[in-house]
Image (cartoon, rainbow, N blue to C red; front, side, top):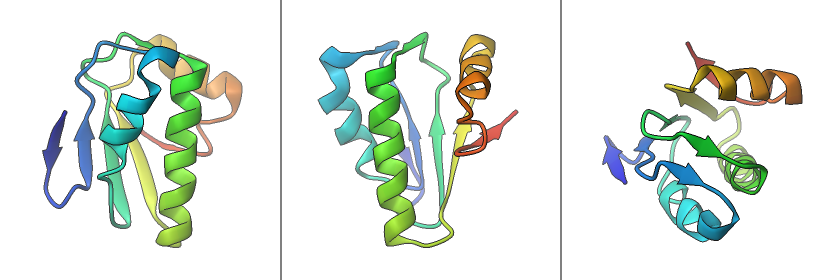
Length: 97
């Protein structure tokens, strides 16, 4: 996992995120702080619903701690962008095209 700035950006390092690695994902995302957080998916090829649940929970926690906090998802694959749209999560997260 690579962190940039004051833990405002996390570049996810694993290629696949599923139930088996949700604790790892939670640890990776737990360093996010502040009102503008970026999660970079450049290395990710698979992200299942259990991993998405972790991402949603961490985002809710950030927003509770910092009202108005933005969580931006970067470098999403086209299928993942489509899936977020279908699930309505493109309104929950900010997606950097």
